[in-house]
Image (tube, rainbow, N blue to C red):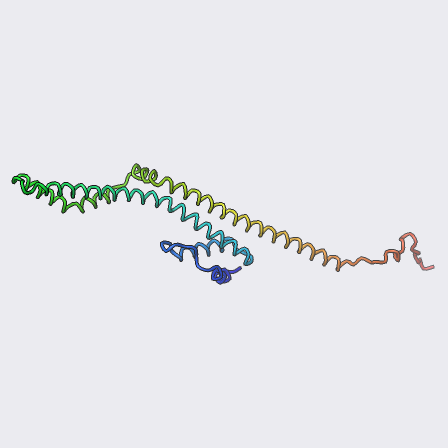
Length: 218
């Protein structure tokens, strides 16, 4: 099948099984490159290549999201720390405000300092959220997402089995076609040979060589 045939058949398979966060062009490019490399001989092979593409795409997605999960849980941890720091500042400010009526100038100065510190809390939050990530931090993210990681691992194994099954079906189908083509070619060749060298059906009409009389001209 030519590239044009492959591209036209693509429309029959319907929308690509992709998420809104994924790029349709990347999926279609992946499909075209895979199909071009395998060089399908007919539509059945192309259909198996389509399943191979979808399962390979899912496998890539699950593997990618295993990494995203670690990063996400780490970011959630940072956000929790930032919110806790902000809450602590609010609580200190609230506690100081309750004694403001009986406060001495030194207490008032401390309250003003807390207010000023609270106003700058967003900067502290940004500092927490933007701090350099260490392997220890990601290790914590892995620990916090370990249940989800186990679920992803099962999905990865399932997608791998489906991908390998599509490959095996493609190989079996192609091998079957090859055997049929070889058999057909042999039958054709045998038929042509039989027509070129016909065999007489009346074998009894043949005269033995020793009974042939040679005319020596006498």
